[in-house]
Amino acid sequence: MIANRNQKTYTASDVVSYYAQLRQLQPAEATILRRFKPEWPQIKLLDIGVGGGRTTQHFAPLVSEYVGIDYSADMIAACKRRFPSTSQMHFQVCDVRDLSQFADNTFDFILFSFNGIDYISHEERLKALQEISRVGKSGGYFFFSTHSLQGMIREFKLQNKFSFNPLKTYVNLVMLAILRLANRSLTLAQLQQLDHAIIKDESHNFRLKTYYINPADQLKQLAENFYDIQIYSWSTGLEIKNQLELDANVEMWLYYLCTIK
Ligand SMILES: C[S@@+](CC[C@H](N)C(=O)[O-])C[C@H]1O[C@@H](n2cnc3c(N)ncnc32)[C@H](O)[C@@H]1O
Image (cartoon, rainbow, N blue to C red; front, side, top):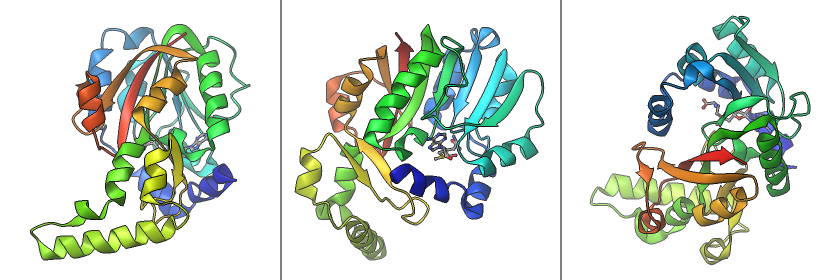
């Protein structure tokens, strides 16, 4: 099962230490932090897949209540070492596939940052989206990022690997060979036909199985539980405002701001 394999990686000590030392917000997260500035003091926030607490230091001091959850007990232990719990902020081990400990309509804002939603199967993802909308208040927000299949298709193409710098070309070709080898059952032609795919990418040395989805299919997938969906470039933090811009985007992941139905 993909989630069990990934959970092992997310409890490995080198991976936990890596997330525990991250500090900076990604540009799209910084955009959202600024956008909701007047509202944060009234917001009860659930930070799913909180990892080592990178987002905690930025969001927790602003909101009325902050709950950080992760299915990796080691990540939660790292958060607790980094941020002593208070009455307003706490952390707990919890899997997004089972949010039954939270009542309906509990949170105003739900964050699942840095692609944490990409480490479960397709069926589990659909269930998680339903659960997220259940524990979120109607009219509240879900903000998350997910890997883009458009971005991965670009990585799979040989013609994108050549540069004027021979050393760079060499490194690119070696990385492409490793990527193709790690995903022997997938061809470029197949990827171009799929809505989503599970891919072993280079993060944490190919130890994760990661869900990639085309942005257009992500929008369809969200439509059952969310509306007014806005897409943000992870790297510039700017909103992607039209279809042309979205079709041309080959970033490896994108952020989605959704209103909960
Ligand atoms: C890429 S890391 C991001 C960590 C942190 N949000 C950050 O931005 O630094 C993904 C996190 O999601 C967590 N995660 C993955 N699947 C999960 C699940 N089913 N339930 C809860 N957490 C999960 C992992 O343990 C990991 O800490």
